[in-house]
Length: 258
Image 1 (cartoon, rainbow, N blue to C red):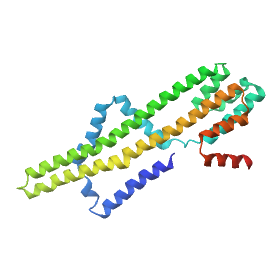
Image 2: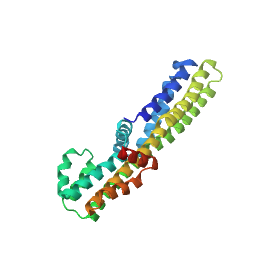
Image 3: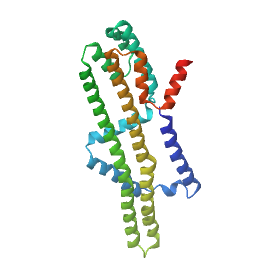
Image 4: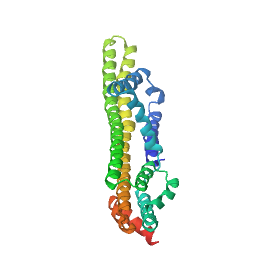
């Protein structure tokens, strides 16, 4: 689980909720017409803009973003270096004994291609196509979240106009002015809340996760090709360290020395 995402969602919602409760009270912010305009309008616009399967698929991507285990490129580099040692010492076919322990389908597929004797160029092409497809899916998921972040405030503004019209039509009846004003203000609140606490932050997290996963996939591709070429395991490890930050490299060197 990505604890940062969970903390951010809980903290953002919690602080706003506390401010509401300590101020006007939660009941003052529960307004069904405003929710219908903002939430319903946002969902409707997204469904018009994208196919249903794409919209439903984005929720699965968000779930993976929140509940997925954090990516550790240093662990992948170490694993590939170990595979390189096995391949250099016992040959590429010896890697077949390692397949049962692999949980990453991408790495498993790459190693299987190497064991099957696939040429390095084809191995790179196959894995690169898979990475491109994955990047495209993640980009579309982020795009949908960005669009929801744009639609929510827009429908909040539509709700504001609806509320103002209702209020202006009932200026002669003071009892009706409050309902129109509530719709006008709360739709703006709902739209801003949904966009800035949920949709846009989740879009940013999707982009960050996609970049992390892309980096790990590239590490795997370069590592597999280097193993297939018979490079020295230490050389492969140093080559793959170029993908990570200096701080991560220093941590890996410290662990190796210890």
